Length: 355
Image 1 (cartoon, rainbow, N blue to C red):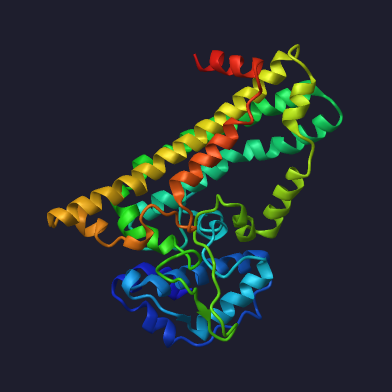
Image 2 (cartoon, rainbow, N blue to C red):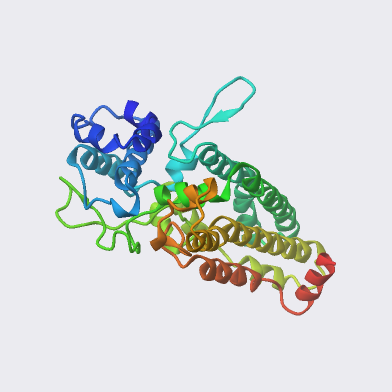
């Protein structure tokens, strides 16, 4: 755990790889509880990201050493997670209360200073804001199944308030994360080795498999990112997707149930607003810095901003950390969400709500 707590310092001093290369093979046999396994996965994933990306895009490796790869593989197998840094590690398991007032701090960090803390903590606040919505979803499903439109409407109103709170929390990213730091320093440590031109073959996990393995990085918006969730979270999504169609139920109730149709319309609008704000964030933290870096390089400027932007991997420009063509993908997701709006009268009602 000592190395995991010092990943940032060891990366910046170019000493992390040598420290890991000389450490003993870690045993996982005494890890018993889920909590211990989650902490181990967090520590090993931070060490792995630091080891792989310590020297940037021009100094990547082809093999993760046995001393790190084997225990990481074993812990991942126990948890049902892939052996790479995931949202379940960096956000959901990476915090503790530092005082009785409930203030939080990270357990482990990556290069990027206060912006790293801001990025992970704001993302955690978004997760916390989503809790009321998650608690209401089973009520929505059961109420649809028994045909109780009033109960569905009440639950959807809770979901809509939660979506608003999530969007407000997400906006804190602009306060706590510096775009040049995210783009130039942080982003590579959230990148994986699948669909990544820097590591096209993937990464060999020594002592696990002789052939390279490929895993995506921190972006968790692709359908395949379900494989990067904890099994219980993955099952929840699968169970919800097998449930009855909420949209069809709302339509079946007819225009007479204005509370139900209004709650549904506001939920769709709230989710569209959240996705639209995420698109704006991607523009601010990836697209705009990418263009700024290209202009500064062309002009030959050497500034503090250029020092940060100049460290960004050129191969990842306009791509998400999960390997996606990011803007086109996010806009498609947003537009598909908008398509869930109610037809005709529902659209008129949406215009009335927006006015």
